[in-house]
Image (cartoon, rainbow, N blue to C red; front, top):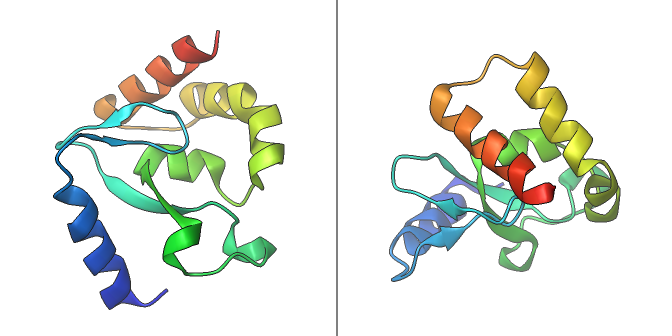
Length: 106
């Protein structure tokens, strides 16, 4: 991905008047949480580095989604979040994101 484009898009997103919502878990992305850009259609499946394919996401959620296609991810979402919670060494603030996402899936 063009690094200048990514930085520009992240800067534009960070100045939105309302809080950004993670495109993966649906929770707000707070100022102390790491913002990433999720490729809705992953690069490994032919997705492009274009604004129409890039959505704001928590870094932890983007890591959990990894290279899954959207429909595949939705089917496995709860299991993937639970695996991350159980097996990954994640920071406390990221753990809270994962725990809240799991609560919202029930």
